[in-house]
Length: 104
Image 1: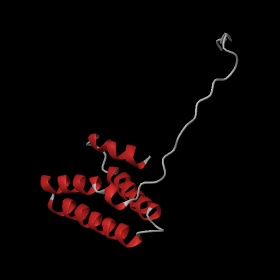
Image 2: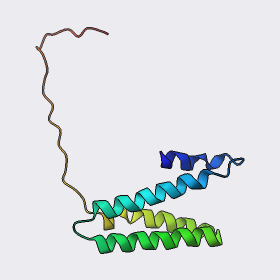
Image 3: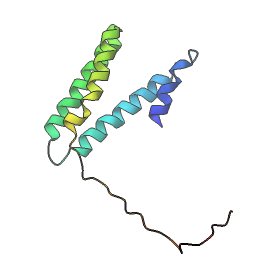
Image 4: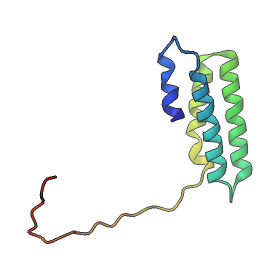
């Protein structure tokens, strides 16, 4: 929900949209630390600390380069959070071969 609230920035009359961004970032930090908790918590904490510095720098200086640093920081997610096991789905035929489907 917080990520969708960040999209409300286009409404220039409203000044409360930064609350949604803060909620989204806090949830993102919690997600990164939780997912990488058993193996590399120190690396995940460092990733979140660097993200916090990048966000504070972008807000303090308001330069376009800082926003690209934020995007580059988001792209480093795969370097910090380990890949999990693959999920496979098995499909099976249901019903008879000549069954006619009824509409609802």
